Length: 191
Image: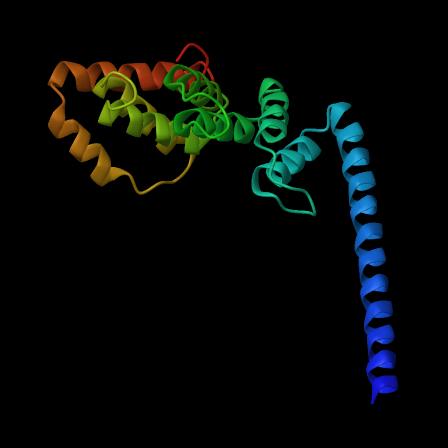
């Protein structure tokens, strides 16, 4: 009986050692892969920058959650005018995830993404301006960004437009329509 227990113990130890060694190999392999990705992303590849940002933000791909590194990669991509990265940064600042909450920074990144034609950012700007809880309420801007988003994507926003129109004066409605048309004609610059 002692011999059987000893043999089982030796076998289990060998299995555990093999598994631990394999896990150690995987970890070092993952670290090497991440290092390679970071090197390539540093050379300006926005897809890799976004991939790394997402991996560090959510702790996927064998890396631990590291919000500071995630924010760094999102920022690098955002500064290259990648609307998705700008949109993500805006929400990081809105929610204060890994950074000091800043509505000013959130608005800055959302506006940059919206001016690139990033529809989700345009819709979010519209909502922020309509609610007025994180930025001063501005129904003209809310309506303007909603019309602009609708011009880029076939959205079902008529009900929301109607709700906004009910809150606006006629002058505000005219101004919002004028500004949205000007913004569209200028390819989203000077919005």
